[in-house]
Amino acid sequence: MRSQQFVAGFGSNGGEEFLSFLNISEALVVKGGKEWTDWDEKMQKGLDKAQDKDGSWNGHHCITGKTFCTAGALLVLMADRTQFPADVLDKQNQPEPPKPTTPQPAATVPEKK
Image 1 (tube, rainbow, N blue to C red):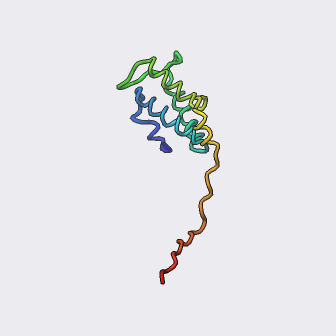
Image 2: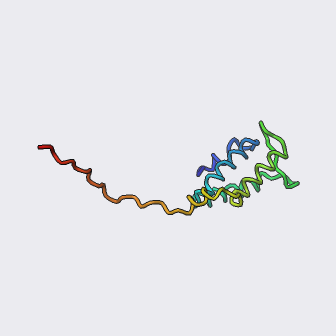
Image 3: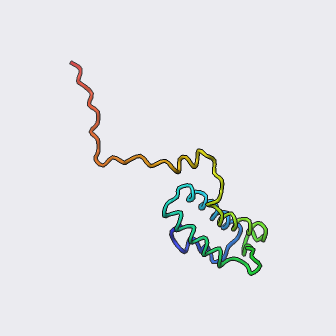
C-alpha cells in the first residue's frame, strides 16, 4: 500500500479496486497515524484523477457500473467519517502497552531435595 504501483493497480480501476481501497481505508482509519494520513492522501489524489467530468466514477474493467463505482469511491473518500462501533474506537484510543527493553530472566523453580 506504500507503493505507488499498488495504488495504480493495472492502470485503470474497476469496482473491485474501489472495494479494495475501501477495505484498506477502513482498517487504516481505525489504526490511525501516519499510515492512515499517507494512504488517505494517495486516495484523494488518485480518485480525483479517476473522477469523470460529471462528478461520478465508473469502472474500466470487471465491475463497471457507474452507480456502484461512484458509491465505492465516495465511501473511500469518507472513510474517516464512518461511524465505528464504540469498542473499536475505544481500542483505537488506547495507548499500546510498553514493550520490554531488556529480556526478563525466566522464573526459576526451586530444586527438590
